[in-house]
Length: 133
Image 1 (cartoon, rainbow, N blue to C red):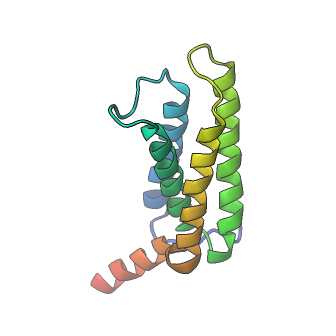
Image 2 (cartoon, helix red, strand yellow):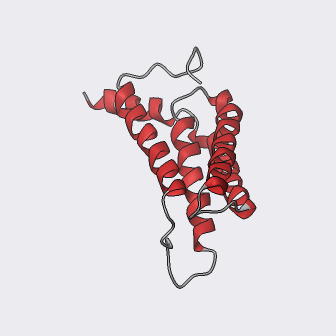
Image 3 (tube, helix red, strand yellow):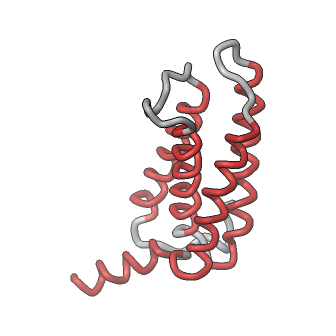
């Protein structure tokens, strides 16, 4: 997704490093043995899925020009699908189509907020920091 549509930021590593870390965290959480994320609440893992992909969507929409949200959403949906198919091959995990739905709900909610307000948020934060200098 790198190219002309990536925002020119003063501190790109400060924005990209946590984003890559979030991706690694989501992938790792999807592939390690499941120990139950939250107990006492049926389907709590679906909220974790939705929230995780929402965070990814909002984070990466801050790094790209506003019109790139649909491309980011597509990549994140593909990531979720890929991780589910990898889970299906693991002896201690399984393919869950409801996880894909939860991921997509989080992505779509993040896409909506990015389109109306949060797209390019990194640039705005840097502008606020610049005015404090």
